[in-house]
Length: 373
Image (cartoon, rainbow, N blue to C red; front, side, top):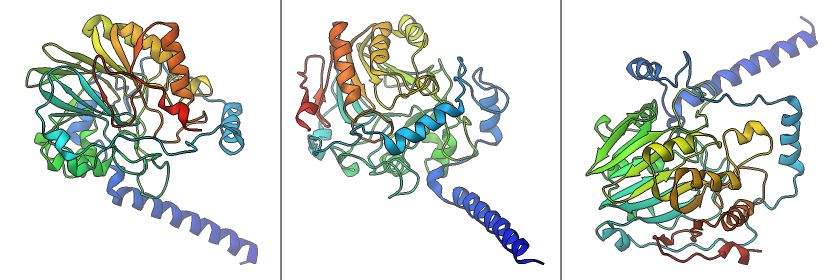
């Protein structure tokens, strides 16, 4: 055998070994989650959103051409945007005593950063897409790192009556946070299929409920409804769109909240507003968008978030999904600057709290990001 053939054979063997090692790592490393199989897969296939092999959006995502991929690569390595804050972001620290008080009856929200929000309404505690870890990735030390610490330690959090998960991406579903909240007795409400991840992480079946779009569950008089969005899912190379993605409506006897999760803009906002609105508070993602329509199909821009707020018939808007992780090509504070301008142009009431600051129906807002230069 010639030296060249030996060399090429060695490369093939090395590639096979690396592939086997990668697959083994994915299956062994618990943060990647579980696989949707058996009865859970049969349940998924009964959903109107499931099209044979995977879940699909009602409106198909625009295909990505090679030109757009090259543009992504160019911006990733040659972009001049200030994607991380040049100074520390202010954080209002929350002691454990704060959570020992009885939950409020009126809407109270605390932004923990990114899409993570702690809520109190009608006497229950709710948490949205909690991620209190330093890294939005399956492996600590790799991937996007937080710009700021969370306002409270996991050990300070009480039992949460309802933990709502919008989808299974790493910046929305975090293994360590899930495990801690499960240990306190919190109950999880998740889109179809995501129970497979929770099971792998040791969450008892009695502590989570999987729902399809327009399905509801109730916690002490508060109705939780999974509602449509335009997004996608997956935690590994082989499970793209194996689990569903959702937004959530939290409707108590006197208060109503909408949480978008990740989504592109669409008619679903008006549909949700007509069927389940109006809302006292809309919690809408404004960051990690574009460029290019394929990206905007699944991550709406700030101006679209304001349009969604209006379609939902909501009173006050809390913009989230910005200021915590570097996940897109825009400047770190561009989403909030654009959102505030759109809110002013449309005369809507937008709350702009610091991380850890309490938001109520009348709490004041400040442009705190302007001081970070």
